[in-house]
Image (spheres, rainbow, N blue to C red):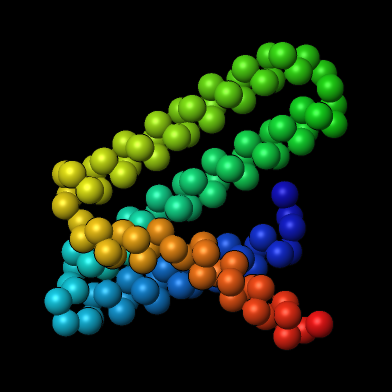
Length: 127
């Protein structure tokens, strides 16, 4: 999928994640744990975005081809469940085992929202 809008949002999200991690590392009371928390939250939202995008792409392809849709739907549902199990495992490790700061995780998880909002504002200015 080569949608230019999605590529711009992805690039902005990555840039915001890197910038927010750097700021979290240098802010007083932050340090490596806060930077890792921001990066971890960004990784969580990145994996979630990947799962949603892959699921939607798979459903669209199945609808377009209509070839053996029963098998594709079952395989897609199993794949979706495994992706969200991966997300749950990642979140558990970050929160319970690594004990990353929850605010930093939340900031990292908001990178996609910030990127989409910046794209919305930029698009409104262009029109």
